[in-house]
Length: 326
Image (cartoon, rainbow, N blue to C red; front, side, top):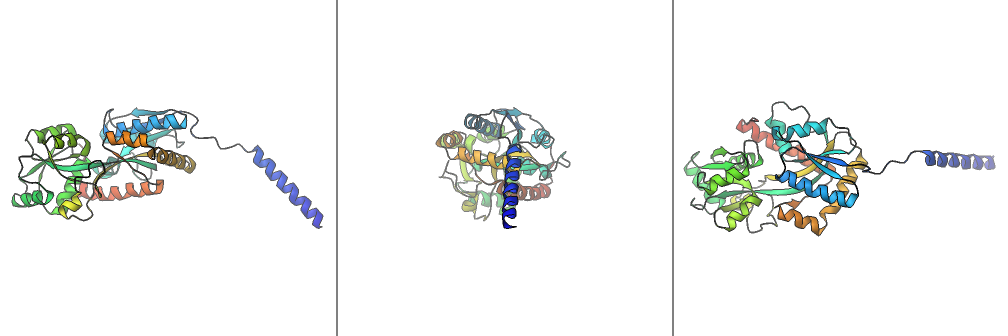
């Protein structure tokens, strides 16, 4: 009986091995071009980051990663396109924190901001700044707060448009500081910066990259960056937390990749690992630094948690200020 048992066991092993040999192998990924949607026009911050990673992935993976711009409706047109795409890893989207803000900014979206997507990886982090025209008699965030308290609602600030992080991030600052300022929206960070440079609006909430040259030329005074820690791209500027004692204040532009819900974990994990590998190269870090952005790394689960937290965080600001998509 023992011999028969051994023989039966051997046959079972052989049959199992035969079945495994005949089973189709999981195909490598990617085996064809990958499309990266961008919900904004070419040349913007998200588009530039998407193109940097697309080129680096193309060079290192051996398949083409192609940026496909689908601008409109605050990025929601492209995001809806992704929500309807096959969950196979061949259609992705590069989004920013705007993805989380849109969840409450729009009264009705054609997709569920959380359930319709699989977060893949964050890719970049960019600081915003609070800056003032040099003629304004303030040299620190504390002095700006003090001035605003003496003139509630009279001091105005320029931002890149209703619902942008430059807007909701500044509103979070005002709420935490217990002050009121008049928000003046512009169509993008370029026009809002020009308005402050020209002296039309004394305070500016904008991103770090376009404001740095003006600050170095003495045409703007940057008071603080909005990140939780000082940025290595401009370490001389304190955080809002440091400068005003507003513990826990943070308003950052994160940029990252999403896939449709149901995308296989193996594909998501490979993309995450590929991006992490690229972020460790000097070439990519230097390329990102020229754009005023820092590479940003996390797991798919960590990225998903960041998106969920920002949906709640910025949703409260949108609700409290009564913002609606234009």
